[in-house]
Image (tube, rainbow, N blue to C red; front, side):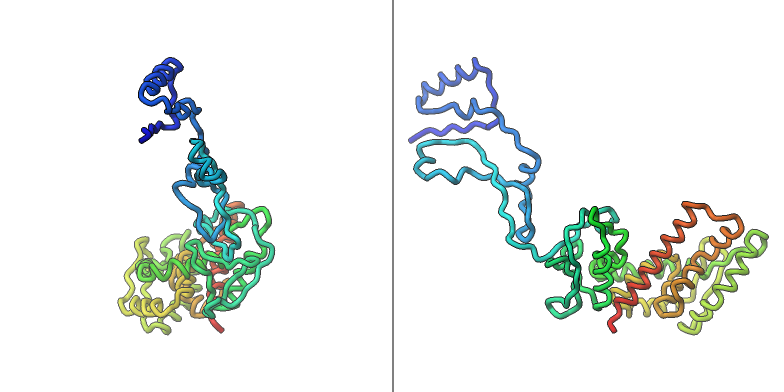
Length: 352
């Protein structure tokens, strides 16, 4: 029986120590080789080390490497010739890739990489339920690798247009609001629907259209007059639509709306589908008003009317004191994008 001695590849001994150890081992068994002791320490790249911890997914090509032994020599040669070397073998690439998955960074707004496709098309989903967006031959998926199935062909074409107009030097998610809202409707809303509704109702008591500027100051009196003129028709619509008169207030801490009105708004939100609730949530976040959001949802307000109500007080200050370039104008542009994209998403997602 042959004794087998194994030493780490990183062992490093001085010449004197090596000679002494060689003499000792030969006295035990002359056939033992010190090749492993005299082999220089091997250095591996971080990419190779990572490959041993996480193998690439089978449906996606990868350029990572995995460790393997030398498989080219015959079995007889392996028995007669010991080799402690380690070879790097490139992982096998998949023959085809039928889908493309957006990374999680898509939801954060950072550039996710160069444009990797030439043509964007739409087609009916494989299960017949909804419509898919195709990047060349790949089916577009959400960041969590769920198929991006749009409820209507119109929404699928809208998202396809966003992908079509991406530049070759990089994909910019902040120019794709419809895609972001679609991912939200497919992934976030089904899981957190009760919490979304709860949060919207919590902020409902501090709604923008319920707040009134104090009328006892020359600086705020004109603002109050403009609020009464613009907000009153919307509040009358809320009363006729839900059967309860909203409470207005001038406190920074907001007021308390009637339980019946809150319950009516809650019932409306619970009846929405995932795309509708995603749009309402986005509109309320941009406008600081669930009433304005529901007004757009119900067709009471158009985009320009909603923007005028949202910016009522700030526009008054701009008219009086002037516009700050790089500040007010950027805010206006950002608000227009948020309100317009959510309103368009709401309209396109509805099945005709």
